Length: 166
Image (cartoon, rainbow, N blue to C red):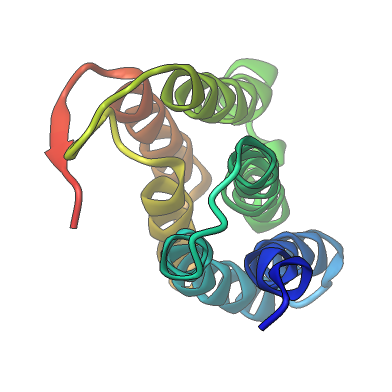
């Protein structure tokens, strides 16, 4: 297999993750949006594995993966939370948890990209946080419960808790 094709394969997987996040944002069906995020989380597990198997890991791929993750597991879950009704809460309980969640996710991704944590993650990966929000969204929780969930997930993402890579 020519090396240029080998390089493109993991990028296609990464862009599939990104595309599912964008579709989750623009979809008017909340359950479908949540399902797109769940599928994106499953797909996100593949791009790095494929790149390693094909021996085409790159800094570009790592950055594209993080940018895609910020959309699919940061912005998309925040938009879903907004659509569920967190936006009907006061400004403090509506906007602030959404902003903190997205910022914590961006911080978590940036910290991961500039660090060398072999064998473990430091803080909850944004993929897991986004997956949790998507699953919760399927049950359409109360706005305050969702705000609290976003804040807890934010703290876990920026924490220094070490989680073993699976």
